Image 1 (tube, one colour):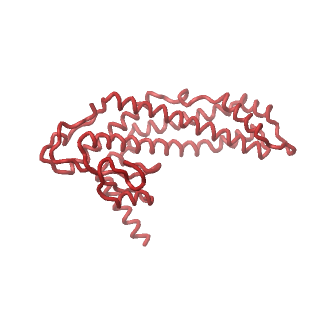
Image 2 (image 1 turned 45 degrees about the horizontal axis):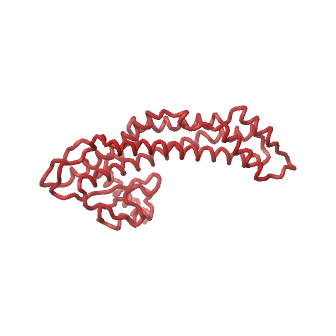
Image 3 (image 1 turned 60 degrees about the vertical axis):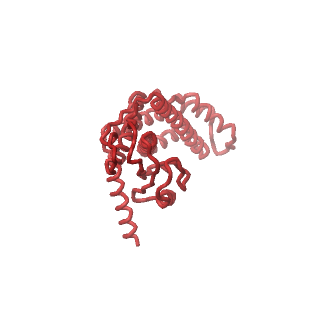
Length: 284
């Protein structure tokens, strides 16, 4: 049974790579690796700055803890205030131009993937076959850049809360702020390497699929079909695949218009477009 399941997943993976090599080749590209490494570096520097001596000193002076201390919400608020006062936004550590270029690169890869897919189909009018995608639509580019800002804001919220919780937990256990900082330093490399991997992978899957879907709609696609891929396909994605061909604006059983359903989702769409199409949209 396990062998049959593995064979099914392998066949799904090979089909996905054939249908959409763009998404599966992203992680091997230099642009992808540069963005991932820049994000990890920035996250590490941001977290490390909070562990400076003046932050630790202030926590230690304002929240002395011993075996007789009764922990209250006031202690938690003090930690939140101290960390919040010294916390600097990620935009102070990361190269925003590099991140914005990465988003635009992903969008172009997504638009191009639509044209790469339809090369496998036959049309009576082939104006869009072999087209090269280059996003120049100012409204879509603005939306992309806003996405960069939203990502940074979300990461700031997550990082600040994680650091706060580390200090709260340590103080509740009776540790000094310096001991807590050492524990955080031990966790940071592995934690932030994983965060960088997951964030860049998820953003890539979302942007590529978003722009591919937008390109499909603007090039008169009428229907779509979900294709699962990967070695651990979730039940939601399997249900989406079992739905077969649905209208281009229809919702899949998972409640999604398109992939991804979850972080590290490798699923993709196939499209149907009429044999006669008008002038193709290539990003202008």
